[in-house]
Length: 178
Image (cartoon, rainbow, N blue to C red):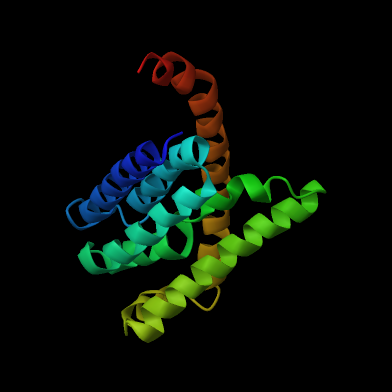
């Protein structure tokens, strides 16, 4: 693919990702869904242009969303996990045996979530999150992290299915006609 086409695809993907990140402030309760959708956009960039262009799109969207996104938690979720995970997913799936692959995926997810909330609570100064968990007891953080791991399992499966759909159907039926 020509460099000019790669730049155009990267620019369009960046714009779409940034639009999704901007919408986090306009649509309530999309703090996690829209950054995940913005990350899904990067799948097409990885497939069509490679990981280097996708990494540049990730960096540009991450930096811009930190400044432009009204929901800073969503911007941090994109920066710390949803933005780069679709870019590195194919590399992680090459790890053998399968157990090491799963340990790597879940390790990255858990470290990213813990780091994100550490930044939200201690750097951005939002201790209200800890106070909201007070009623649930001392096990609430572990329960929420466990539920997050379940959702991550579903997200990872959805990404795999979307890659298959993109390569086998969308690329063949839609992109080849353009």
